[in-house]
Image 1 (cartoon, helix red, strand yellow):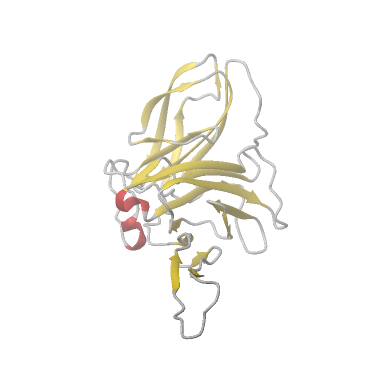
Image 2 (cartoon, rainbow, N blue to C red):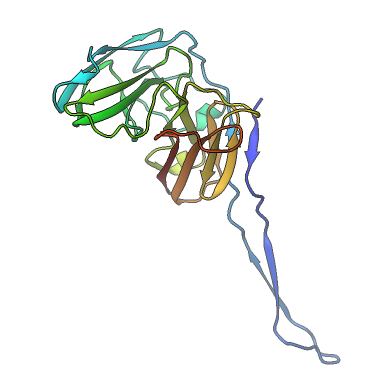
Length: 267
């Protein structure tokens, strides 16, 4: 069953303008009506049409140490089980309307909660700058929805060369990692945007922790960790802010638990 969450209701405005301040006897009163359309209403809708991949797993084989001597190119190697990278995910229901990579399923590689890079092979090289860094990587369907199970991700702290600011991040505490939406969308892809994030060490519920999504100023409270589809967005720049909150509605401490991104929708 899909659950639809609506923001502030929009309404059409009707303005009546009289061309004459008074109506004289036997004189026709002319009224001009101008209809002004209100902005389209933004909504988010949960969906559960995706293959579950409950037994799929991701582990990091290389680098073997989380301490790296110096900045530069680093070899990464992952072990992927019960999941086929490069295979296009079967799409049914709402997933059929989402932007999809024809390169298939992949790994979302997220360093310091910056926009992810997508990797369709388990081995690749990445530049690692000097300092303290936090890597979260997880399996992704071809339409960029994360696989959410206890084995589908890795979360590691790396120190490259000299340590730097820890960014107030502790990957053993409740942490939210932003994933989608991302980048530019055009044509039919602008009508349905995937809203997705990854959670570490927490669940969401009506009475517990929650994620507040603010999309172009409209707020939505998310109480279930699931993928959502954003609808009703205008063309142009769209601002998405996600915050991980406790049961009292207070931001949970953590350098990644409050993030704002901008995406662009084009004709």
